[in-house]
Amino acid sequence: MAIIKLQKKTRQGIRRRWMTSSLGAVFLILVFAITAFSVALGSYYYSTMSSGLQVKAESVVEFFSGYPTQQEYYQRVAAYINSNPEGKDSVEMQVLGANGTIRFSTFGLAAFSSPGTPDIAGALDPESPKTTPWMGRDPSTGEHIIAVSAPVLVNGRAVSAVRYVTSLRLVDRQMIFIMALTSAVGFVIMAIVYFSNLYFVRSIVDPVAGITEIARRIAGGSYGVQIEKRNDDEIGDLTDAINDMSAQIDQAEKMKNEFISSVSHELRTPLTAINGWAETILNGEVRDADDVKKGMNIIVSEARRLTNMVEELLEFSRIQDGRFTLSMEQVDLKAEFEDAVYTYKEFFRKDGIELNYTDENEGEDFPTVEADPERLRQVFCNLMDNAAKHGGSGKRIDASIRREEDAAVLTIRDYGPGIPVDELPHIKTKFYKGSSKARGSGIGLAVCDEIVTRHGGELVIGNAVGGGCVVTIRLPMSGSIENGT
Image 1 (cartoon, rainbow, N blue to C red):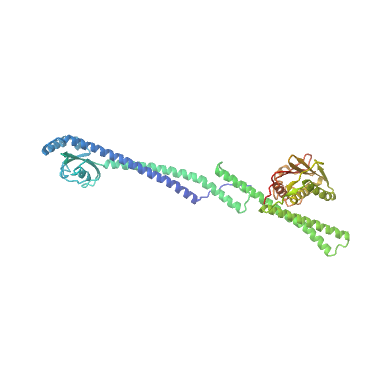
Image 2: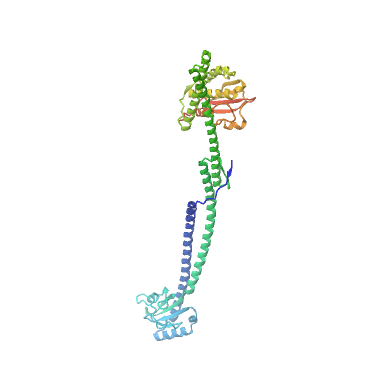
């Protein structure tokens, strides 16, 4: 059987769903992580700067406290501003009057203006002045700034405020750089996840697509095709299952075709004999009484063979669709087997075949068994027919019965050519005929095996020592027996 390589066929549905779900989840996680990191980092930077400015403002307020008059306070402030090096860096120190107007500034450009920001209002609040931080846009320049205003108190009343202001331009730029860097890292992670998922999905989707294509071919009638197994994983297990199914379907199809051919031949042969002799007798071409009797015997024999074949097919049909049942009762197994032996003994004698019977427990009581006598007779007759059909060339058939502990053992042995060793495992398979040229449908042994199995027994077929085939039936003498439906 040809090995068909897996075809590369994209299944956009599975791939799209897999990529969307996996990449979507990773994307949301990365967005959340980058956002949380940026917010935490920005909060850390801004809060650190705000705390630093607050410490500075409160330190300066404490330095300026203790001056009894406003004139001395402003003189001290002016001296501090002129000598303080903070006017040379990015932090601007402002001293505001009680009305919120800037009186002094280390930068000098903002003097006598009124920023009107919330931090000033909080520091100069008549009810509860307190040190207040604020971050936002400068009203005059629109620049992003952070400011802290601390009140200068005289008798619990805010008479002035010290305000520290700095631009957030560098911090914002640093934050933008960090966000860009983290976004780039996130993009790299997304790219890694995308390509790894793409490889993973392709390693699943492509083999599945190929398996689907092969399954379609099998469904279309290309039985027996095999898929190339690439990996020893779940896909490999699926490949093995499909290959096994394909092989079994191919074998079943071949056996079915052989069965149809065999049954057609089996039906045509007796029908031809029946029609031929019936027309000959009807036309009056045979006048001798002996010839007429011979022709009628042939018609009866062939009709009986057709009836047996139809019954066999009906039994097989009942087994297949679950309508096969047993009518259980207490049966004298030994008597039933002996009846079958003596019935066939005369038939075989006419064909020159000697049928010998042995009761290995002669003289001993043989208990009855719970069984369906009609079904057992069917098994015995079928096995006797097979012995004569396939092993009749040995001109001898031996039948025996014995008791082994709680089981009855019946054997039927012929002295024919036996069964090829490679065919023994399949001999009870439905439709299987092997290399035998004898006529038959190939389902008789399958029906016999089913009947014996439903009686809780076992049907074993093998080659006998010294040549020929031996069939062994083992039936329980006691215990529960299946009455399957």
